[in-house]
Image (cartoon, rainbow, N blue to C red; front, side):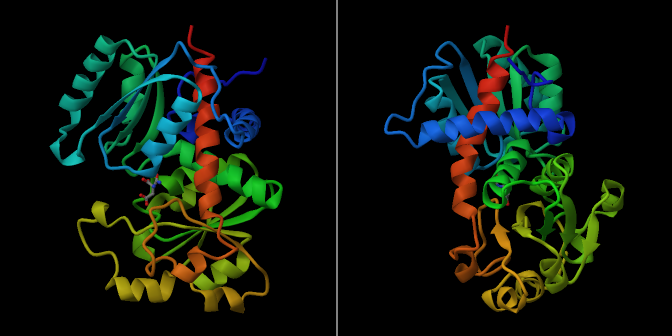
Length: 308
Ligand code: NCD
């Protein structure tokens, strides 16, 4: 039987194309399971998973919890606001708590980049990164590219633009790695202040004009402006941002083709995307949410099968 090349999912950077294929094939199976009247399989009855969320989350936490429960794992949850958390102290505390709880797998969201890598070096449990600061969010990129594969029949050769606050987005970095590993062409589009300086090293195209970017792409993945990560102003006003970088129906109608619109959520309706576009046939935002459960089931199942 095929297995993943890794014991943890810390970032898309650390997995290869074969791993992604295996996760997708496994997710195809679980997607079929979650559409059955009985949505549960007994696969992980002897596995205990701790969900540690040091940052706010709604859909990601819910999606992981559902995935774990549908695999019949035992689940414990811990949530703490990031503001009450101090870096080193918390991670060491976390390590000790995990060791004491004897859990098999830890799903962790943490405000510090590299938190998952740190944890994986200190505990024996399998670690899944559910978002580490502005660094990586691997399951989001897997579900995003899985949704592109489902909608367009494949990822290789597709042109994907990531629009908006690339600088503060873990979704952007993980998507860039995932898309490139699957042979897609990637562009980022946004105001210069929200495009990181190191972007050229990643081999992506950069475009500051939204219409040109949309005209180029097959898929536009719209990012939320991460106000909570901004200590200064990166653009004059939200109104100006949405005028320049918000996707509206009239912009889409002017293109000479129909593109696919994605969004990781939560949506700021009227800022990066209008309600009309978000709720249109072109948008696959709710498919992404549905696929998120199947992808997380696949990741957890494949990692659990590597636990000795
Ligand atoms: C993203 C995140 O938390 O990084 N959301 C998510 O996981 N559903 C994107 C965001 O917060 O804008």
